[in-house]
Image 1 (cartoon, one colour):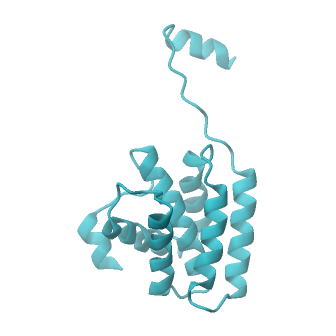
Image 2 (tube, helix red, strand yellow):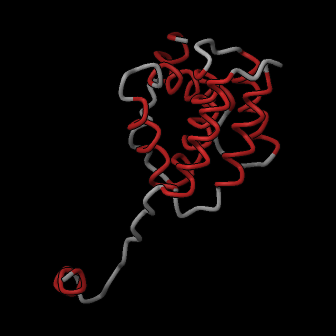
Length: 155
């Protein structure tokens, strides 16, 4: 895992584009389910990549980069603040219609190694809940009147 991480030097916490953010959201869902049983199988990572490719969710991102994203996020999900990592990765794309993809992917990753662990089932339930209650991203409003009008509309 560390070879892919060090060779690409990617930053997942603040992806620069909506496409990168959407790819990170899909990848983190797969990684969360994969680490839930405490052993990440290569077939689980392969399932995430296959899912993304089959649905053309991130055609602009190379498989190697997706693998590196998966490996990095899987490592970060083993840390005590894993819930914050998941929420922070999902929040920027909460307005996109990804919920059905995220739930379907989580189920496919759980079944990929042909052993659905009870912790993977819990992770899927958590993801379903998160997709329902995650705070929506606030739209950025461009205005000709500038910051004064934007500040007034907030009050």
